[in-house]
Image (cartoon, rainbow, N blue to C red; front, side, top):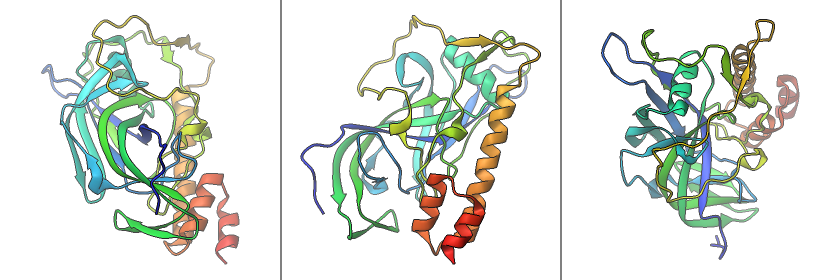
Length: 292
């Protein structure tokens, strides 16, 4: 094992999340819940090989972690109320507490079924490289090199993003009261098709390859700005346009079915084939032939 002198000082990884809205006539704010990380391999910008985060070394210094849109400090959305590591998974729960246009967009579109993703930002304290031909056990699983193991990291912030997928993780925004303040129904926030982003997973799943996204890497240790100066990009949706939310949900569902079928075919006995099949978009038939 080796510890390179140069390594990224910050990493982000993504997972689906769900927004749940407050029920009844009270003034409760919309809530969200996510399984942020499942302990497997990920493709992360700045690391040339797959990455595994050692959950024993992941520090959660506070429970009220800021939640933003696209990792931009001035685009506040809310905060977490509970962050914990349970059964090898990173769990995060919180509320959409900010009174901003971005928070309202996330709340309403999430309740309408938009497949928001959560991007988790963490500061890297220590990482090691496992070369090709060597094997290591992390998070109760065995991985073959080459890969990077982040031994120590500090969870810093969570952002809502509109692309990227980790089919092994999940999250939810609780559905809002019908009397909640709403945005203009004729405007739809633009989103990239999450089904088009390549993913790198092991048998229990992982996140997408952030290196292939067009978003810039976030900078750590930035404070929130309560006075946003920009507005989210929107497009007018006519009655003849296809519903982008429905299309994205259909593609995400198809991808989820493909991944689940590949996992059944590999049955946990062919992790390398399973990871490659999911990452490269293999058909079930091609996967079955590779397993034989």
